[in-house]
Structures are given as structure tokens and as C-alpha cells.
Length: 437
Image 1: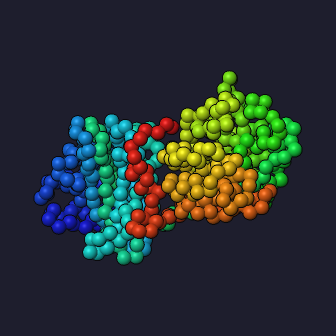
Image 2: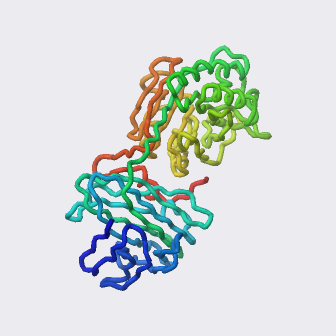
């Protein structure tokens, strides 16, 4: 792959997609193997440097430094030749210093362009992965060039962070196969236990519904809210137990027996505190993790239920799963926090609420949302799977039923109106408000 020389800046050094040890002065400023500094306005220009022995591979690094001023914005840019219709993997590594919120202040942008230099489609953004032991954070993803594309511009950004520094290195844009599909089957169960005298009575009633999900090859089934207490006549404090505890042990065995993940919520006791807690059980029969409801409803906190304070996301064999519970869907912060922490799927055990709220949380955060409730009314919350466009992919129309939707977590979802693939954009375009981890 070759760099395209840009007009007015001298001839680019052509050496494939990888950085090599070449740094020269050209008309308009510094150049390093075709990489050139860029800023939206000169008065926002940070300091740019080339570290000749930098980068994670020692083959050279591209530095951006911000001084004490607010609002500085800069990027290194390079244009590559591409073949329309082919797939390309973009990879870049960043080492950051004094960047308080990398999600917001750093990103890698890829723009496929036609022969006339115009964008062939809206920009794409590489995913950020965890930093390695040396502090280098990889950004990478696979994108397909539109049929009319002849070139692609890569931009490596640092913006709006006084006193911050970043070094980019080991950057490549290489032809690739398409993204491997990540097929997941998501199930929602619409069942309300009745007639149980104890928590375990209720839990035993769930087994046939988990079996229905397994028969439909579900990888994850979401059950309703507080399933071990519903209609038992027992209070939260009477049913509450530690997590892990008897209920999670039973659900873990159920998950293992049917070889799928299970999410539901139960009352949890921790010392003198009570929580409404969602639990995630794995096909291996293990408690993967728990989420304590951050926004207890009025009737809950008046009974002494405490709020949780974290938005945990769990990396499982089927994807990154977050959980929220009932009234959490009434406020945007919970789903937003889960999405910011990497959730691809949000499981929502819920007693009820307006279905527009589930649609909004899925749409605005670009996650698949699986809701499990107890009714089937058209104007009330649904048991179903909500897609990235906010629409129901499948819903339960009968009580006691289990519905399944198959989704591909690797598939790009493009919005209309020139917005493009919105999910990677919201990583760095949502407002810069610190979120708990």
C-alpha cells in the first residue's frame, strides 16, 4: 500500500502502511513518512514532535503536546491508497500522559475518499482496547472501503486536554478479511412466578422457561425482576440473601444444565444494607458478576433499599454484558454508564414501564437491550430484544412465552442522514462527564 502525495507539501515518503524512521521538513511543517500535523485552526495548534526511536516497536513515534491553554486540538494525518470494496484493518497504538479521560480526548479516525478527495462515506472510528504492560493502548478495527473509494485518510487525535501529551506509534492500514461474525442468540422470558411460599419455590418455576430458551439455542436468557420474591407475600428483608448465596447457586446450576447465560434480579443483603441486585450466571455454572440497582424506585427506597454506585460490565464468551433493573431505565445515566464502560448487550429485568424508554436506551447507546417483564400489553414494557435502531427485533405476545433474536455483534450499523456508524462515534462525542467504573 502506498501513500498518496498531497499537493503543496512535497513528495511523501512511500514505505507501506507502517511507520519507518524518516522525518523531514517540508513546505508547511514537519513530515514523518507521510504523516503531517493538522489542527482545525492555527490558534488551537498544539506542539507536534517526532520521536525517532519511539513507538511500541521503536520505529518512531508521533507526539502531540498541549500546554496550559483550554481547547487545543491537533492530529497527525496520512493518506493511503485503497481498493474499493476491500476490507482494511486500521491499527494504532497510543501512550498517554496526563490524559484524564482518554475516551473523550483521544481517537483514531478513518475516512475513505473518492478520487476527487471527497469522503466516500462518513468517517469510521477504531475501537480502543486495554493498555498493555508498557502503557501502550491499541486502537483497532476492520472496515470495508466503499466501492468508489480510492484513498483513505487516517487521523490520530488529541484534543481539549490542557497539559496532556500523547505519542502515537506502530500505525498501519492493511488489507484484511471482513470482520469475523459474532453471532449471539438473545432470549427474553415473560413469566411471573405464582403460588410460591419461598424463594426456592419461585426459582424452581423458572426451569421450564430456561429450558425453552435453551431449546431455541439461546446464549443468554433474561428473566424478570425479583423473581425469587414475586407473589410470595414475603418482604425484601425476608427474602434477601448474600450474593453469592442459595439463589445464585440454584441459578448457576440451571445455567450449567442448559448451557447458557442467565440474568435476573434478586434482593441482596450485605450487612445491614439491602439491594435490588441483578446477577449474571454462566454456562460453566459460575456467578460471573452482579449489579446493584443504582436508581431504586420510590417504593423501594421507602422500604429501605440502598442504591448501588457502579456500572460494571462483564466480558463473557458471547460479548460484553451490562445489567440494569426496572427504574434504571427511566433515567439515561445508567445505560449510558454501562455503554461507556463497554457494554454491547444490556440485560434488563423489569417489572414494568413505558416501552419508549427501552427503545431510547438501546438507540442512544447503540446496544442490544434484552428486557424481561411480566405483562404483554402493547402500551407497557415488553419482554423482547431491542436492536441498535431502537426497534423491537422480537417480543413476547403471550404470558409464559420465551422469545429469541439472533444478532451479529460484529456487524456495522449505519444511521441515515450522513451520520454513519454511530456506536464508535459516541465513545468520544458524548459529553465529558466523569463516569464511575
